[in-house]
Image 1: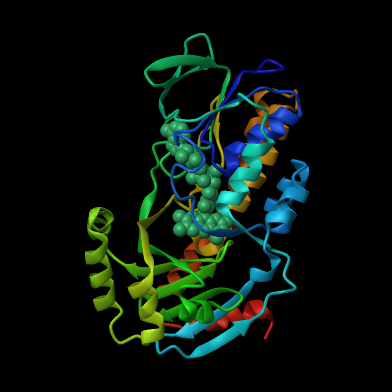
Image 2: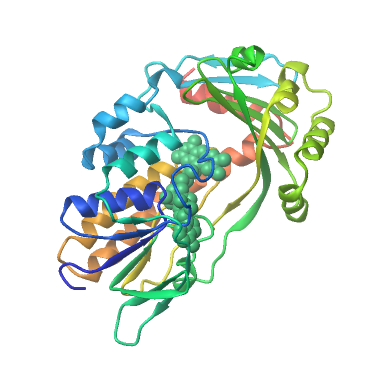
Length: 372
Ligand SMILES: Cc1cc2nc3c(=O)[nH]c(=O)nc-3n(C[C@H](O)[C@H](O)[C@H](O)COP(=O)(O)OP(=O)(O)OC[C@H]3O[C@@H](n4cnc5c(N)ncnc54)[C@H](O)[C@@H]3O)c2cc1C
């Protein structure tokens, strides 16, 4: 690796943008390829909590602590748990926690605003990455190939870069989330249900979730076990039909809870996929992965974005270390080892939240975490 390699970052999500920011701070000029045509191209998803030693640390090292604090919502860290009859079993304020929430859109905007002009190419979906005989890789975008010394795949679940390193593909986890949106002012009952942060209502193999976002929005999810074919069909189904099917599946739940399904603006159907826990790959000079591209997991552990940001810190250190590719190889070990316990937690969270055992296991988990 030359001392200032030409670096392509494929994917302008949190991981890719953080890496670009940190590299620019050290005088590098990476190119970020992002398939979205602009920042508002598609809804970016709900609220994320940044953890002290990973997400928050990355923001600090990127010199973005002030911007993060200004946009973060420490007041929205509460947890509520209901059973399917609408009985409130657990209610924790969370005001003293140190995992402030931030809207995904706001986080992305902070990172975008931090980049020097010209480093990010919008509307640039990478179609292929091809190794070159003399070293380096062609990144193919819009039918045009461009050579880079180093390619970092930060392109999420369905990475185009990952297949150059491994044949492993994400596997469906048997659970699908239907995403719903609410305006808190227009939906006073949903607003009251959620409390100061996030609520889960857990029943036999089904879950309803709602979480406070910024700007008076609430994001909800109806989660259920569904086979993969059905889940894929749902993604193409008319929203009204998905809603009607959900109402049948959640029949018998308290009306205050099913009002989430009835009243929410329909956003998306999201079948959940994950890479195998501990996923790793044979290192290959000049090409690597981080974030979801490296260790996709279900959102039930709340770690994905934190890992992506922490990975970016380690990758920026490795790429600028002057120690050649062996520093990246060591970084890949760090990335995969850090992701392993998080992936175990995410799998456990998914399987206890959506299980035939109902709410009891989740209640135990909440009490344990609260030290009750
Ligand atoms: C419903 C849901 C809720 C979640 N909740 C949480 C949570 O509460 N806490 C948490 O920590 N994590 C959560 N996550 C996970 C979190 O969103 C991810 O772990 C995180 O976004 C990973 O960041 P990333 O940069 O690696 O990838 P991504 O955020 O997926 O970004 C990848 C980027 O690459 C771009 N891209 C993809 N393919 C190409 C291509 N071929 N060419 C160019 N660009 C491309 C995409 O447009 C995107 O901008 C949640 C995920 C989901 C689905």
